[in-house]
Image: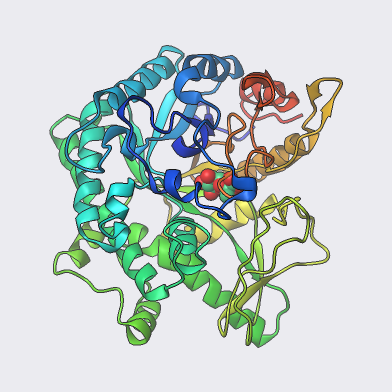
Length: 471
Ligand SMILES: C[C@@]1(C(=O)O)OC[C@H]2O[C@@H](O)[C@H](O)[C@@H](O)[C@H]2O1
């Protein structure tokens, strides 16, 4: 296969979705601990109070990762588990948990990849305005410093944020995620503060590298949704709408971390329309001077785009009933539409493996020869159980197609360094509950959260052993 010997075959998770122990051992509440308990926010009121109880079972889970042969494991750190108030005094039990997790991974030769922020902002910081308040930037830098000092001796792969498109887009534009706002002006300013927080964390990482406090071989990056957009017809209106979608949902979120600036014409449009983002004097240089070492791309689907003269609709499918969501759209700008010739999952996400290769090609055209990690890719499905076995053939087919596309990208000269299927183990799907499964390992919620290897677990074990053969 075209995969280099050093290729990192991994798997991914996120703290709020997998750990549980939501208030154990001094952990403070995150905005998701609060939001998910508000009526009507999640499918059937599911939440991460217990999740997969990875906090208590991580040794068993890491043993399963080792059995699968993982080379790397991407996980996120729960900020309020380390800093219950978001800043100030650290919680020793929180530091101890991640330290033991890292040691367990290293014991099995599994390389940790840390995500500092995977949506679970400490509620105490939301109480002072969250990402709208520049104090949260300082709090994030303090949190990053704590993590570099506690784990930087053993961890080489770091990313600051996961999917600004989602936590800002759904937190401030559609309102489906906390803080549940629908205010583009506030969202754009909050997003700006996230980019400044990222830049400060990168700057600190580079200082710590110079001082030998984190590995000089270490890399720090940003994780974004990679969602290729294609016009549903080649009409000028649909083509223009598609370009607008790419500018707002891709370039606006990638340029600041890979070019160190916003796309100029969109920046002008935002500042004329809403007067944001407002820059502090240091901001422009902070972005310019702190470019990522790599980009993490989370690929699930492509979106077909059409002109949208009239509707704002954003009701997403959180039930798993095909077609139960509406298109996502911004009146006057663009909307996503279904292509009758495409194949979709139960949650209405198009299955388009080649989009993984095409998406990276397009990013390489815009940002140059940057290193990529495929930090998420997976099939959310209700897995069939036959004679007591989880026979998740659809997931094997989905991942096989995407691994082939990743190999295609490598053959075309793209610097792809790792592949982290979402998710190692069945875990909470934010708004979709536990019925939307992604894991190689089944969690039997009717039987004390017992772990059970799915068919795809053994298949992926073979892929890793053969460095990429999927048959
Ligand atoms: C919405 C949902 C899900 O749980 O279905 O999509 C799949 C996967 O997407 C990722 O971007 C998120 O980082 C991760 O937390 C998961 O979130």
